[in-house]
Image 1 (tube, rainbow, N blue to C red):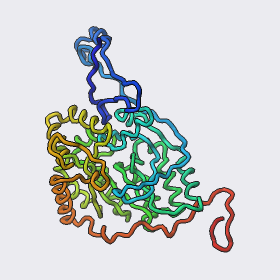
Image 2 (spheres, rainbow, N blue to C red):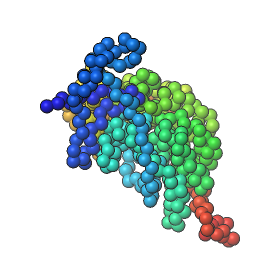
Image 3 (cartoon, rainbow, N blue to C red):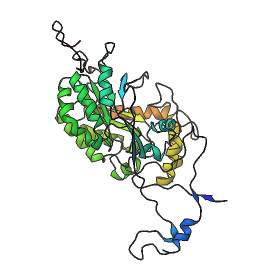
Length: 390
């Protein structure tokens, strides 16, 4: 009988393991077949000749390279019915996310592709190269009614792949052509590349940006979000967007008890200092496989805090230590319930009031929709009476 190999953190990746998806008939397990020990005999002391091969045959595997598959869906606008989020429509140019955030609530969706919500989610990505063209077709339909289109609700529209593929930018170009309102959520300063589109749209009341800042500690950020922009770069993006007149908010998300919850006030102070006008937070969500992935991450990086972190998570869900770690109930899944959750909400509200954040939120107007005009498509004819296209 062979022994299974323990999972270990991989440089530049968030998840520790790559367990098979829950719909798979077979489970993959890495095993020790003895070959690595045989090879290790030829390099007994590791660094003797200047190489970095560890002693005793404990070889580091090669880097896990990102694979991208193009897909061509028939539609790209997703309709939302949840009362927990302030938008009805969203668009995700990519599935999977190379940022590798271990806590990402979207990880379980990779299981529907026959892939692992673990390392597969951040290394086996899907891109929608025709997203802009498909979007234009949807916006051109006579029955279409405009409302704010959210980008970044499932996976980050400015993940590293976007630098080369530019799918998000092509989507923004279509939205700008149509004067269609959009709201972006990201944790990347790559959003500044598209300020030439976002700025003019914001001036017309048609664009806003929310930047996620999980921690101000670069070392913790590298562990939680290994391929996302450093905290300082995100705050720099907030400052640049604010100076350009773009309505910008900061998301303290997720709040993880015993890991980053002590930073809430510091993050809000940094956000206000950078020019953010609003802020919000989301409590760590652990749906599906994320619960196991997060527990593995704690074992690998914070074994001394694991019991306390999970115990406090249960407390924020209205349970005693050892109780349920997540409740998907609408209305409470983002904030939690019980005394611990109430105290967290009060801390956040007090800090925002002191720093002048969210002052205009109650009276804030939604992004405009009255300037929308359907995209001009090949074959359309100009209507002399209405001034539009037919």
